[in-house]
Length: 330
Image 1 (tube, rainbow, N blue to C red):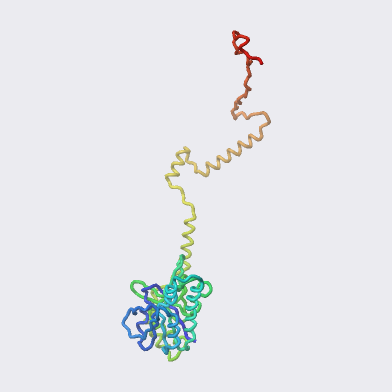
Image 2: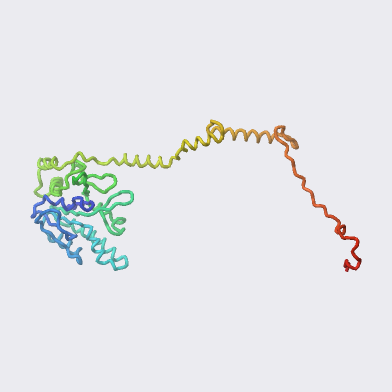
């Protein structure tokens, strides 16, 4: 069974450039995007046809005699097939796209044990900042975790014009490597060095000695690049949320206005407590007063007497000089 390695990173961060130290007769480059490599080279390259990209990649893996195979821009195996079938509806299209990519990884594993296959791919980030290999659809993420098929997952990084491979998980990505394979968190983005380390670690073929590898380690290591402190970052995020939830104090001007309006220097809490106490005492006093009595300190309230309207005699306003025949009684 061959060793397979996944290298993820944003475009332009040194994935393809990491091939620069291989000799032309050492490596087969399956150039999925069909673009020139970013350095002068004479590598054997295969550019799969757009219409049959998956089949060409599978055929190249099955027939190559190289001990190093690089599938460059591997995410285009999915995205090119999607663009070719973009007008198709239904789930069959998505099943084919994701199933073919999974099958290519399985085909790479079937190569001889002295072969190492490198899949170079773009990455994607979610809203929380977590990074993973770029895929299409949900099946590969929910049913198959792509990084779970690899023992070695490296990530590219660029700082002050220096290009690195990161070898350990930061807490927000899927980077990993075997215990003791790499001495530092960051190394040069040199895939030839990585290939030498893998063959030495697993004792594959005519591998380099430990002394030779140690000399290489000193050349490519970058101890100045420290691994992010995820605990410290999470603690800051948690403290920041607490600060946001804590109610802000009233401005000094508002406090001053409130003091002036009350005419006293008492704090607001003391005034409120005093008001509650006085209210309770007044209520207790009122409840202890006998029926019909009013406390001396309480002013008497005048009740308004409601009177019924007096109905007058309806015949009082009739003049006496009206003739009898003018008032009808029937």
